Image (cartoon, rainbow, N blue to C red; front, side, top):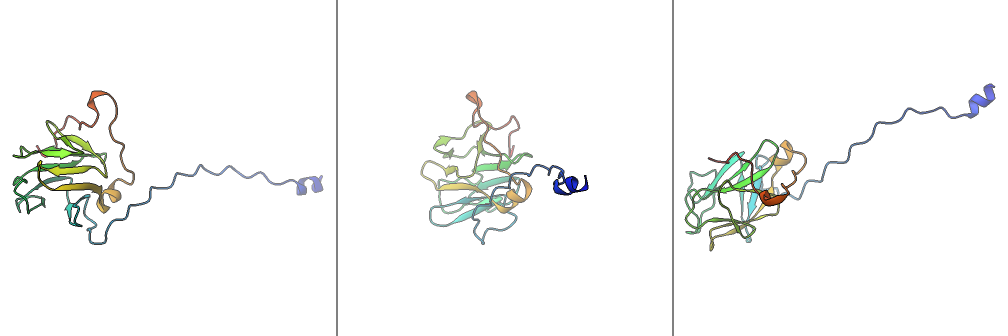
Length: 163
């Protein structure tokens, strides 16, 4: 009987299920600070950091993110904010020339954004690409899914960012 028991492999307790690996962080240039929740990148290598959960973007130096160099940009042009779940939204702040997200004019309560979206400040103003920054991944390890379904697609929640 001892031989029979010695020949049998001992049953191993089942191992706990493994968690899926966290997504790899995108290539973030070293010049982007660790405190940036997101970055707006221009076509000529210029970039603008979004350092807060609510960021007023415009031509004025008083803005959280100053994008100077074009008269198409209003002093306080738009706001990009981050909700508690990591969802980013963009809202026009009554700019003279409008704000566009992926060639659609931003109106009303704003639109939900995702990394890779194109933001244009005014019809003739600069076009910038939105991407997540280091502070975003530190706070929210996984990218949120864009809202889907029906006519509300792309709309932000009822809370207006940067009121």
